[in-house]
Amino acid sequence: MSETIFTYGSPHLKYGTGAVTELGHDATTLGARSAAVVSDPGVAAAGIVTPVVEALETSGLRVDVFTDSHVEPTDASLEEATAWARQHGPWDVIVAVGGGSSIDTAKAINLMTTNDGELMDYVNAPVGGGANPTKPLVPLIAVPTTTGTGSESTTICVLDVLEQNVKTGISHPALRPRMAVIDPDLTISQPAGVTAASGMDILCHALESYTAKPYTEFARKKAEERVPYCGANPISDMWSREAVRLLAGSFRTAVQSGHDAEARGAMALAATFAGMGFGNAGVHLPHANAYPIAGMVRDFRPDGYDADHAMVPHGMAVALTAPAAFALLYPANPERHHEMAALLEPGTSVSDLGRDALPNALRRLMRDIGFPNGLAAVGYSDADLARLVEGTMKQQRLLATAPVEITEADVERVLRESMTLW
Image (cartoon, rainbow, N blue to C red):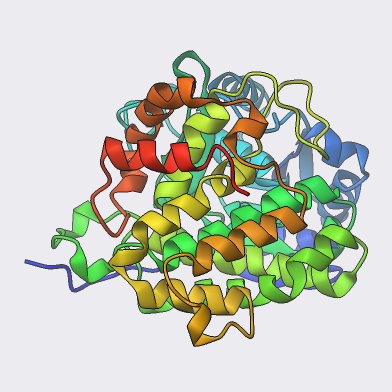
């Protein structure tokens, strides 16, 4: 039997300039008297953590602060964060302040301070044990300072598993933040390179969820078998379309003029909207490709990131194969690809549509925002294809959401075509 049911979940949302000043009220409304604030060194150095702590303490909460979240978390960094949390906790609420890395670190802290076992027990199979939490987590409030990951809306904690050279995740509805506090002023200091990479993550979230396998094409599940990613559905479609519409009018401006408040506000909304879309529908091939691309990096250092290690930022790793991936998947639903191409480039005529419309729109955008020209520009060659394909094929949780069955040959073709983009 085909599926007839889809599910939808989202955090309570507060949006607007100055929203961060109300965090104390928000936490006490949840019944909290103690809080952990989880962030990273860059956000702390920018002075963003201090007003968060002050807002919480002014409302009478006891606050512990962790500012050592790793940019692009690893199993090792999350185990270090867990060790700190188990020493200083528990708390009534956890407040994540930062980009996806800080929010995902907070999700791991929340999981591992409320449930038994080790981190790898909960990592998605086949990389980890794929276990589900058995005990309730405490409320998590996410305060994003970058516009991209949508982690404030989702049920996913993403990490690199160092020994296996692969990026994967922990996914469960209990990980979704209880509340997302979106204050566009917190993103003004985001460097252009970070805005570009994280913005492409927003865009791919929206495009992948909109072109995902429809929920009606999955086999019927029992109630206990339902997972957060249920396929494209009417509610996720709405959020994905609106995210792309917002990006079309703001993305290039936000990269080129970071202090443009209107563009920053639109990007912040787009990030959350895309998260509310893909966090329910799912993502597929570009994200599956991104995990080994990020996990196998050798010496690439991206502009705008103050990292002490080589890295391909998540949004960049996703976007580099997106043009070839959408060209491959076009026959599954040409109309949806046409719609996204026209939203991304308003004024697109019917005569401009076809298999290459969306891929070419993506290439033009990436060139305009200063992206590397393909996988070769971040250190890969055809000699890496076999290992990259192997890493992608491990991401079956994501590939299951693709609108067609993805083979190793498909993945190799997409990766090979992504070595150079223009």
